[in-house]
Image (tube, rainbow, N blue to C red):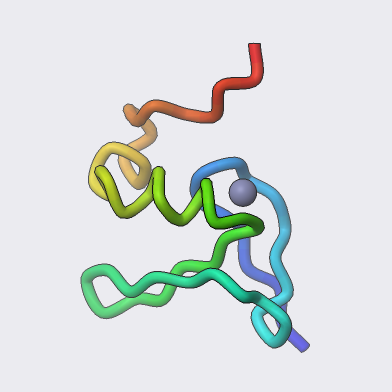
Length: 58
Ligand SMILES: [Zn+2]
């Protein structure tokens, strides 16, 4: 079992049970929820560089 970090909200995601994933630049990213996947796919560069629209938690 392996754990990946959801790049959008930084939550830990188990790769084996992950329902939402996305491939970008040859790497697979895992998400905790469809909303995170959507946010990532809208602008993966922004998420990965940390400039992105992070989660709306505030
Ligand atoms: Zn998430």
